[in-house]
Amino acid sequence: MTTTAPVPFRRKFAWGGLAFKTVVVLAYLFLLAPLLIVFVISFSSNRYLSFPPEGFTFEWYQALPQQTQFIEGLQTSLLTASITTVIVLLIAVPATLAIDRYDFAGKAALSGLFLSPLLVPTIVLALGLVLVLGPLGLTNTYTSIVIGHIAITVPYVVRTTLMALQTSDTSCEEAARVLGANGTTVFWRVTLPIIRPGVIAGAVMAFIVSFDEAVISLFVAESGRPTLPVHVLRYVENSADAVVAALSVILILFSILIVVIVERVVGLKNAL
Image (cartoon, rainbow, N blue to C red; front, side, top):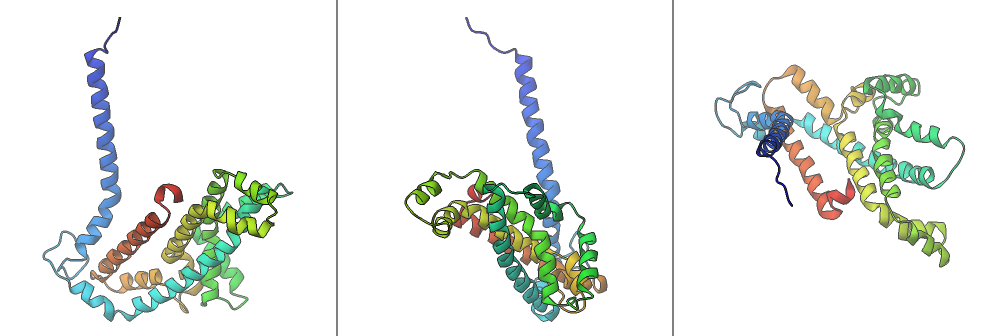
């Protein structure tokens, strides 16, 4: 004998599903609203940053190449983000392998040390870097920016690589060792291909975080090697037109392009 659920229960379940979908849609709109407003303002004919727009124009995009400070800042940001990403990979991947595969004294402390920058406010970390790098004469240099960015990007590579290691099958590594492969060969031929999605995801996150970092760059290299975010902050302080909105749209499209590339290369489901 079969029974059917009462009609009121079905209606309650349907209303609950509808309410959940509504909340999800509203949450997405809340998160995307600033980006959509910036996109609209970048084509606005308003002389100042304001919403809603009074007309449509490409003037702000045409004015971007004339802003040499943005071009210089972009070059600095791309260079420092690329160098930071490479160095972070060289540090984080071996460290993560050691944390995951070996037991040693201070293992928990080392793991906490690599993740601690996520718990420290960025402005506190920036102030500490100024106090350390200032007496060494390293402020206002590429070196100071890279050192600061390494500190805040290492945790991302450690977490993604550690996740890839913990979810990977180690039987292939054991088989390679049984067949006579040494540790270096096992890493390059077996381990690295297995954890490649996690490493690539961490590298992409490190690059984006480094490229977008403003507070540390402002403290350690504000007057010497300002990055693009620092130039944007300066521009907003002195001007109120929509050039920064046009620049923001280009940066958003750049971020989307990176995500698409990662999806094509390794797949977001495997990388994240």
